[in-house]
Image (cartoon, rainbow, N blue to C red; front, side, top):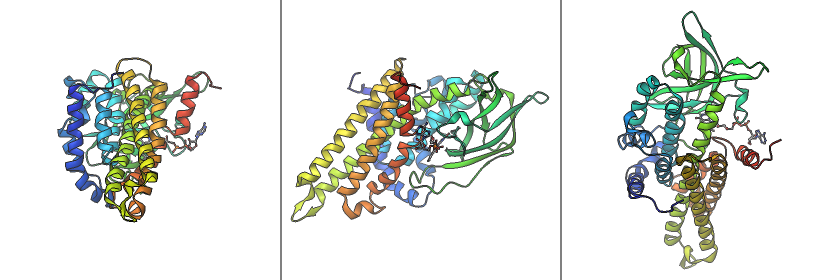
Length: 386
Ligand SMILES: Cc1cc2nc3c(=O)[nH]c(=O)nc-3n(C[C@H](O)[C@H](O)[C@H](O)COP(=O)(O)OP(=O)(O)OC[C@H]3O[C@@H](n4cnc5c(N)ncnc54)[C@H](O)[C@@H]3O)c2cc1C
């Protein structure tokens, strides 16, 4: 793995860093406080091409890859995780399934608008009774052969980007049949927003990611054309495992950004804040805490870039993606806690970015596979599966 970014990636990194500081940082605190989706910021991210980063130009993308996406996510999350998760979910969970598994017609229909950020995509896997155990999916889709339509019934929960004014589609997983041994066959189906019978609840009240959109979805006799099946019937389980493997690389870059943002804010504050006649940054206890935070952010970066390099070059990357996700989310939580400590009482005040980072960090150990699930995947890759 080359640790130098190519000139193109360095240019992308600098552009997103500037955008995060000049456009996101001054505004996002207010959106967060109001629990409001930042449409104008997301539109600007679309104009910059961020939603099209890992897709070919023929579909309106930027011709990059997961390394480019990770670079952008890390720089955004150094400043704010709500906008970063909007991008991560829009690309990895919304558009990528269409790109990886869609027919040419589905790609032509959806990808140009998803890549430009004109519409957002979402991925509906989790259900009230099945998150980690995604095989427990209860949502069903029955093919009505008379009308050649899927009829979908069920509920999905915690779905990112699913209810904004610009959400265009949700890819849902549903049981479409049973294997001879009785196991459910799961398929993925594209449901456009606004389809009759498909309703989105009001946004959840969350601990963090307050300027991102997360909702419960309900499907009551929702009819979509048979052609909305994404990929092969019964292959939905294998498809979302692939999508989640890739998504972990992206989430890991996001978590690294949060961990690094905690360092940035702590260094700044430690130089400004005085106690007992000296800046607190001159005390070894503070210096060591920040040095450890930097070590963790740096190591997390190596881990996600290693997983991304393997993914991009077509090598196996499942274990490295799980390692990167597990490590980066753990250190994001560590750094958010320590950065808050460096800030003292001000760290508990929402006007300070570290307070937002603290609230945003915990979900990183839960979403797109909990830390326990990552450990299960790593153990399985080591041949320890039961
Ligand atoms: C803000 C937010 C956004 C989200 N966005 C999306 C989205 O866009 N799309 C989507 O489909 N989902 C989304 N999710 C859902 C998320 O992926 C799940 O919450 C997560 O996978 C955990 O599932 P669960 O909540 O059902 O917890 P559970 O699976 O019920 O787990 C509860 C606890 O038990 C542990 N556990 C479970 N099984 C085992 C086991 N075998 N061994 C040891 N421990 C175990 C878990 O690690 C966890 O600690 C989102 C969630 C949140 C909170």
